[in-house]
Length: 113
Image 1 (cartoon, rainbow, N blue to C red):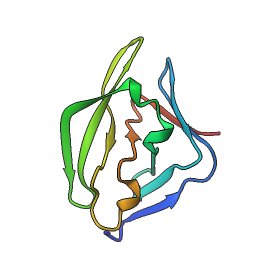
Image 2 (cartoon, rainbow, N blue to C red; image 1 turned 120 degrees about the vertical axis):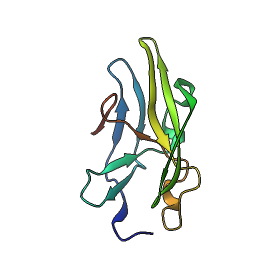
Image 3 (cartoon, rainbow, N blue to C red; image 1 turned 135 degrees about the vertical axis):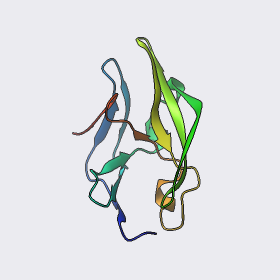
């Protein structure tokens, strides 16, 4: 793992929501900090309403984390395209986030409660 990426258990209860729905709650979130960027909270899929997610065709590659797959959130108010991403097979040292979901902050709200 690159020295500028750090993982830790995100303490407490975390909730992910859109303006119209709660998408998940977890006590098992992981916080990923990369360099000077804001931390990103990753949610385990078993704590997220995956029925509201459609896998999209979008992928991106990070030289430190690996290839990310994207998901759109489908709700009563429409679709939030590519609003979540997941590293199915992250690079060595980041295996803890495999299959977890992170969310775009411009269309979702992640909060600790």
